Image (cartoon, rainbow, N blue to C red; front, top):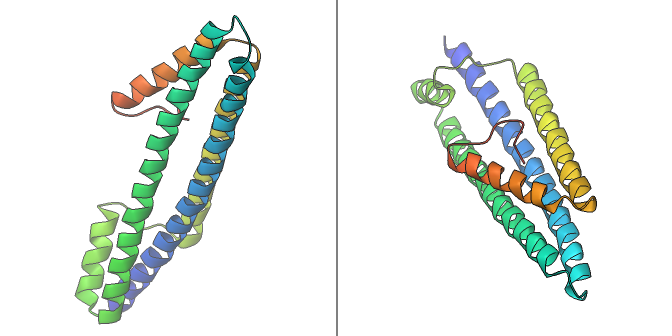
Length: 180
């Protein structure tokens, strides 16, 4: 029984460390991607600022900029919170690991799993990596679609889409299709 607890504890530690590192990678990716999207929108705004008769489009671009900036800040705050939570979990693991108390290790494993089954570490890593890759690909597709719609001049559609995403998030989350 003691070896199983130690093994489960070690698996949980390895998986939590992996998840922490993946979240840090995703944070860098999304920070860079949002920065590029915001820069793209800023260039469009700068290009219109000096042109006469572009007040309506300039206002639309400003709306797009405002929505994207707000959404990116919320999204990045969520990732920061996830990273902080994982960091706290790693500290708890480290503290209990030092104590060598099998009962505390068992309790922490049960608490962190919250009724879920502890996966094999390799399987866990594959699933997390796959989900991360899918998230990145979905995000790139959405950004590409937004940039394409902007280039085509479909500013009203872009604003409507971004507003719908923001409203959906306020109602309790966004679906995979709407995810930024």
